[in-house]
Amino acid sequence: MFLLNAVWAIEPASAVGPEVVYAGVDPAALFRSDDRGETFRLNQGLFVNVFVDGENLRSLSGLDTAIGPDAEVWIHPALSGGRRTNSRDRGAALESPAGSA
Image (cartoon, rainbow, N blue to C red; front, top):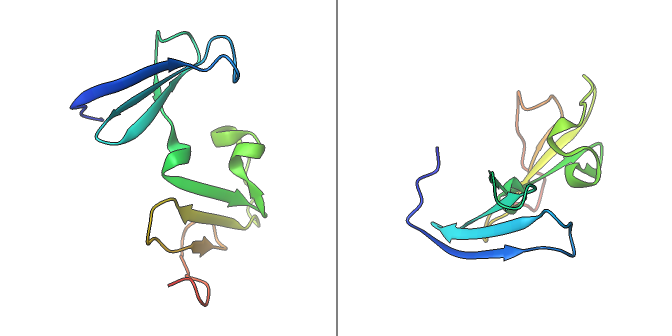
């Protein structure tokens, strides 16, 4: 559940698609609608970047991307002062590469 204090902007994104609308909210988050604002979902891409075998999840099939048992998955928090965290076993163990702390 996401508790909103305010919606500070609702903008159509016709360059992305004719049905796409974005809503900026407080606390800071961005929601996207693909049905002209009938429904919205949190834009997860603002918070983490996920790579599967070196490919950004957004350039694959997004959250529907199939991840094989031997896939290398990297999760990069998208925040100032964050650090890169890698997992080579689908999230069972996390590691910070040298120089990313």
